[in-house]
Length: 379
Image 1 (cartoon, rainbow, N blue to C red):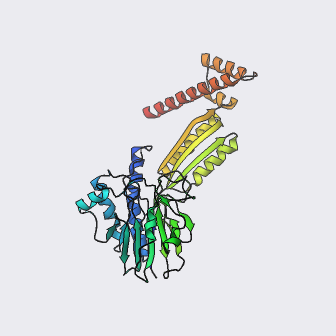
Image 2 (cartoon, rainbow, N blue to C red):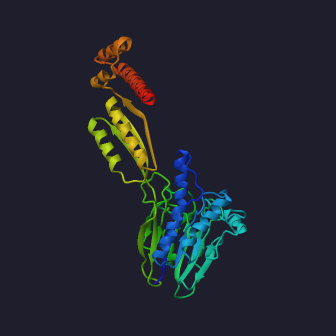
Image 3 (tube, helix red, strand yellow):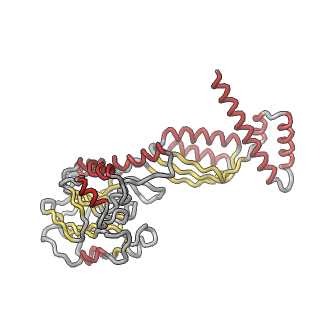
């Protein structure tokens, strides 16, 4: 019974410019580790081949070192790898693929599907019909070429393509590159392995996107998996098993803080979030001065546990309570100003005074923290 591993969208050489250098480097390195996990998974699951449905590389201009490291990371699986060019690494006349060949980086068990056609692997029981992209965007369905070729009887007919299944992903996916939703029926395919959508997605029983094996975006689309596909014989329905391969779990939270329990729940979520994660938080609403101190302390703990924690608090308004103000121990002129602002908050339109009080309280709080840090440094 033939068994193969379906993966796609490795995006090797991807840059993470929105992150600090340390985190960006770790996220890029995680993608190489993921290829090693894919190779180990293929060996552990006794797969006959690994099919990579496009976008192995994030750009044509990745470094020679990146090219070499990609193929080195595949060494853990000795069976055939079939790698398809996608929209990020299209098979141009001069491409990342031609450079890989000139470098001598491509191992003997790796087939580069740079031209449309059928690759038969009789020992593995597979006939791979490939539709490589030869430019970033196409406006015709390249998988139409799957309909005509005959393959050796007894071999599974497996399509390998990169693009957007029409009527389903047309508005959601990055590239044009249309694919007919009934291609498996038209081309008598036992399975169509697709790339370009970065999460696991089933189109029909024989058509699947594997998604990227290592998440790289804040989208809740089941990224971070590879698919192990079993097909007992030509015409049999595929049996699909999802295997988690991603190292980092990417989460994006959008929270409004209105009452104290909102903050309690947010801190609880932070404490319970499994590590390691890449977390992007955006907060709005209101928070007291003491509540902000609790939030900052919780964020500090989370930053030490996870790969990256970014929290945008620009829309979160600081609203100090009377207790907050009392703990600032402001005296003299500042004490008089605070008292006037507190009294003016009782008026019909207290927005300006509340904002001014929040700013002043924040400045006092920062000064106290700086004084405390200075005293600790001198002791």
